[in-house]
Image (cartoon, rainbow over the protein chains, first blue to last red):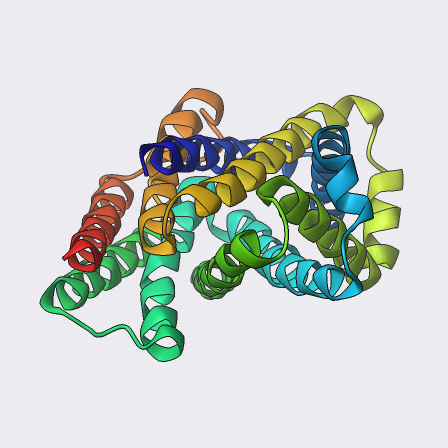
Length: 145
Length: 149
């Protein structure tokens, strides 16, 4: 479990760094070009690492595996990341990151709907705090700049 | 201007939903289909291909007009994101979704620190943004605690 926690913190640092450098990039490169270029760099780097460490596994993958990879890729990058970059462009890296951080809220809902998990008082309190935070950040984006 | 920023809020919230959906599916894939690095790299590849098809005409023109000296920050952004995705799938293979997703959500705090360091003069961080972020993360901790009980 602790390994997963440390890896998640590393992932959070990577996403934070990406949000900030995307904002810097958007000062010089329009949104569509920045999205494609960052994805090209990400894909090339990841594929290189995966090919080096898991080549045997890759050549044995079934076609259905690639279908699942495609589904996750489209949801995460064509959907999630493209919209995130649009949000960064509209309201800044820090504010948009705060809102994109609502994903555990949606994950909890998906867990209830698809995995049959029950709602408890902590979930309701957490949801209330998250919605309050989202409203506060939204108000902030309207009042500032 | 307010309308533009409100659209940004909508984009960000839909983006959050997309990421949570991908987390639930990704968790299952790390258990049933392939190792986290393979999943992250191929999902990135397919994401790139579909995004390219959608954005190609505009993106190619924009990239062509961008001087190479301006590519540095986008390359760093891509590398950071790539590391984030790889660590993300690795963490999903080591811990439950309900643990991983709240922890990853601390990234707004890291973003605020990095924005303070690297985005001076580009964007301001208000007290409301900081308070809102703290509320969001407090809520995430509550959810994490609730799922632990």
